[in-house]
Image (cartoon, rainbow, N blue to C red; front, side):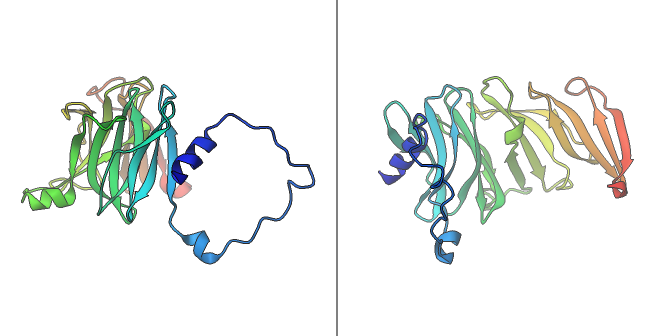
Length: 239
């Protein structure tokens, strides 16, 4: 109830200030060290595209899990229930769908998931590393959602980096993943020497970064799978 009150209050219409100018600079009460360093109760609220829901992270037991607040019904629903991992990054895709990844003590452990704001149509997009180990898979894959690479328009798809133990782990491939079906399609087949990439607003990977010794090379292409063309090259020691 307290959590619901805090969130709904923070999203309420702007209120008129009743503080006088000489009160605005009053010294705040001192905060104890214990309070300053204690774990946050909830964090990172994000409004849905249609403005009807707020997704946020809050503690369920000891771990951060994903919750959503229905602004019209004033109802909070818990969407994930991890007891060994924290939900880390998350984002809205489409109007009422969320994607999220998990972490352990702030370190990514693979694992990417999608779910609707009402808790339906849950989909595993990439198993976490422990699940893969338990399945005795020959090679392991780290699946990381690239939250900044979401298309500008509502879409059921998201770009995801895949790090495979059969390859150099610093050189990921990139897949476009359907968050409803989980189906992947390759959009960036790393030849083995590219360590960074950037998409355009439609989700096509247009920029790639290559490092040869101390030489940083910036590459560009017009569309997926077209040849790369060099845009710039410079010495990283030059700052």
